[in-house]
Length: 142
Image (tube, rainbow, N blue to C red; front, side, top):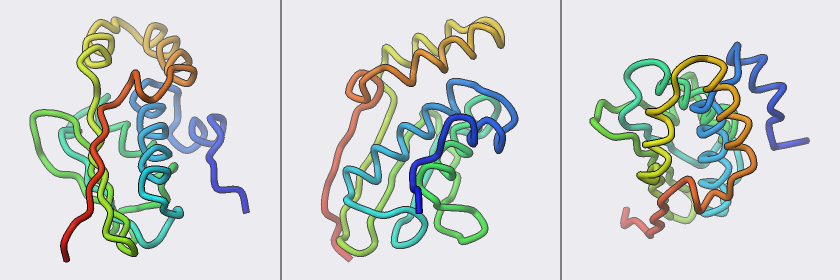
């Protein structure tokens, strides 16, 4: 079974290519790697600050990359001012918090139209995750 979602599959699911879809995929893959976690089960994902489009497109990328879904109840959206993702491995009690770097927020706010957004989404596929996200990992007490 192939665990990694292709960009073509993600676009087919979501309906179009955009930066928040790509960022959701990249953040989800990073979370699984940092947590040493498999897709679908044994994890919980919280997404903050994505109440409206296009920020809410991040949700689809996270669902596709982590396998956490609203139907299974292992992903939830929480109202907040800033975008942040918290993912937990329920088996080893590790937690990772992923937020956007200020430079990424600035780049996203400068996008003017769909063509710019699509071009930036393609660029995001090639940028090192260290240049996109701030990451904090910790063990949680249950």
